Image 1: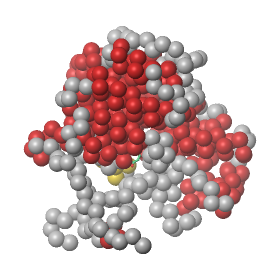
Image 2: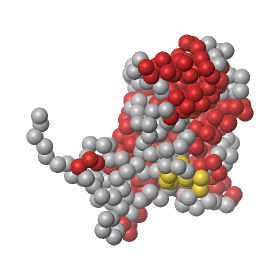
Image 3: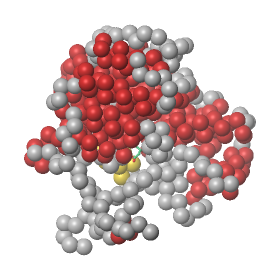
Image 4: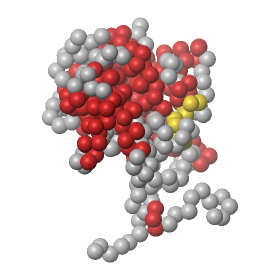
Length: 386
Ligand code: MLT
């Protein structure tokens, strides 16, 4: 390869989802196939006990903030946290049919129409600040849980989200705890995951922030991306139903082999980049073992983790036989009392929009010495259809 060449493209690389193609720089995070996710160079495991605002500060500024700086950042976000009534009323009038992720993407477009400033930096901060109210309002309305209260300036970022969510019988402290972790683990996953890539590509036409994020969220809505957290949970629920609460490792192994032999999917394994267990999954498994060891779904998810990997490793064609984050995130949410799987991908989107918005600011305003990256326009070769 010539010096400076990062990647030699051959015809075998075409129509492979651009796996491994270098496209640009990501200033927020990186995913190493063997070490997993880092935020600004720091392994995700070091982030797990941090306050979400500390982590957002790190991703936004590219360096950790002092206590005062993070406090100041939090106050700045709180000032921006209130959506206009017009935004909320339009979100409440969205159709209740279809998947909630489509309504979430529509809610972002509505917010852009009413709240958008056209300035990427301003909109980035507004998105981070206002999304908890937008997501809470949407879920409250779709599930008919009632009116969404205003953000409470006395409460923290995640506490406010849970405060605005009118889910019946919610266990506030358990939900705050689990949502802190869920958010921190989902904020960013380098520049190439589909929703992030799509958001940056759309913004490269100079479409404003909110519209670009709406496109990102339709990308996240697909079952091969964010919607996998809902599908994996449903898989764990089905396995629990089939194998029963008292299932042993042997029972689960047998069940997995049976599914594979019948060409049925075993959900929650494999990743486009990772070649080890997703460290975000490892963190969630530890959390589940510590907080909800007796929960039937947790027991099944843990058995699937070990038996699934063991069985899948026998097939040399499977490049990543390890669990990914979606294998366990939904189970943890259920165990903490968030029992509405149809909303899991909105929770993913609520956190992922943070990383995407920050990456859009970089590409539009900072990349290439401040010129920004040009409009995305890859090359397609012509071929006669057979
Ligand atoms: C993500 O967190 O975005 C998923 O693991 C998918 C990816 O990284 O491509």
